[in-house]
Image: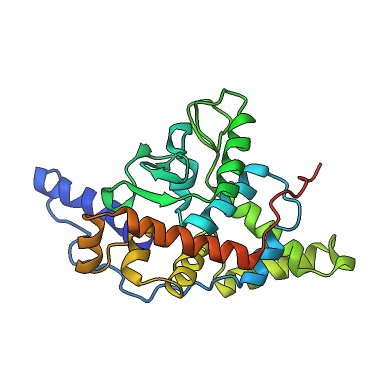
Amino acid sequence: TINTILNVGTVAFGWLKDRGDISTNPAAGLRKFSGTSKKRDILSQEEAKRLFSIPWDDERSRVGNLLAMTTGLRAGEVVALQAEDIKDDTLLVRHSWSFADGLKSPKNGEERVVPLLPQIRKELLNLLESNPYGSQGFIFYGVHPDKPMNIDALSRGLTKAYIDISISSDKQDDTKERENIRKAMIKRGICFHSWRHFYTANLADRIEMRTVQLATGHKTTSVAEHYANHKQASHLDLVSKAVADLYEQINLDTTVVPAS
C-alpha cells in the first residue's frame, strides 16, 4: 500500500519532468518501502466449524467465506464469479473484480480450475437463484445488475461472525467488548485473506505443495510455474479429495437458518 501511494507521485512527477513541464523532479531519489509485511494468522478448524454453525446477517457473505475456505479464492475472485463458472464438480476462476478496474484477469494473469465440493456447489446455486437480476449474472450480486457485491462485505461478515463466536452470551450487546475482540482479531492477523492461508496450509498437510499451488494459482517457484502450465486431471482429483477430507473433519452444517 505504501509503495502504491509512492508510485502515484513518482510516476506523475517523472512524466512531467520528461515533458519539460517542470525543471526538477521532486520525487527523484525516493526509494520504495521494504519493511516486513504483517504476518497473517489462520483460523483453527474448530473456529471454522463454529463460524459456520451460527446465523450470518448476509447470506452472500456467509457463502463467500465458505467458498474461500474450501477453494482458496481471493476476495476479488469470489465476487467476480458468474453462473457459467459453476461446473459439475469444478469451478472456473476466470476473472477477478475491483471497483477501480471492473472485471479483469485473476492475479498472475492466468485462469485456473479448482475442485468444487457438492455441498458448496449447492450453496452457490441457491445464492444464484436468489439474485434479483436473474440467474445469469454475478453469483454474489450487488446493488446494480452489472456489478457484484462490495468486496468489503465479505470481511465485515467474517468480522461479525468472529466476534459473535468469541464473546460470551451475556456480553453480546456490549459494544466496548465487541470492539476489543475486533481489535484483537486485527492484531492476530485474521482477515478474509486468511482463508487462502487456511486452505493452503491444510492442503499442504495432505498433498504435495506443487499440487496445492496448481489449485491456488501461486507461482512462487519455477516448479510451480511448470506445473501450472501442465495441468492434469489427476492433480485436481488429489486436491478434491484433500478438500473433501478437510471439510469432513470440520463437519460443517451449512443448513443454518439465516438470521431474520
